[in-house]
Length: 127
Image: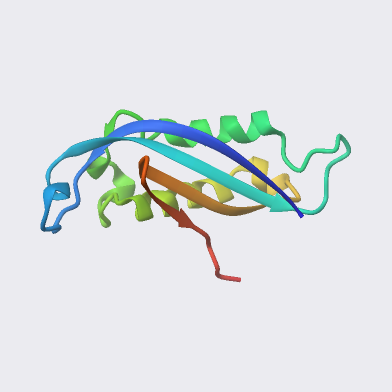
């Protein structure tokens, strides 16, 4: 089994509506996102997935979030833009990309770091 991981970053603000604490106020993070794909079959060049294509695909998704107030974005109108919900959003975007649709690799997980000490990893465990 091969696993490939790439990282991306974005800067954005958010607040957690309904939370009793300092995160209820608008504040920002320099978010770090790790994407892991896995598989056993390599392509004719010996790649599971081309690093540069996976990096660009992630960058395209993160551009939607960069320098935004996440609470104002359509994808977070019905849920708080917590690290958990951001990870699930990015996962959902990635899994639908042409890169992963045509690849033999599967999206294993998306990890979102909101600080150097706190992250969440999302996996879609449904069959």
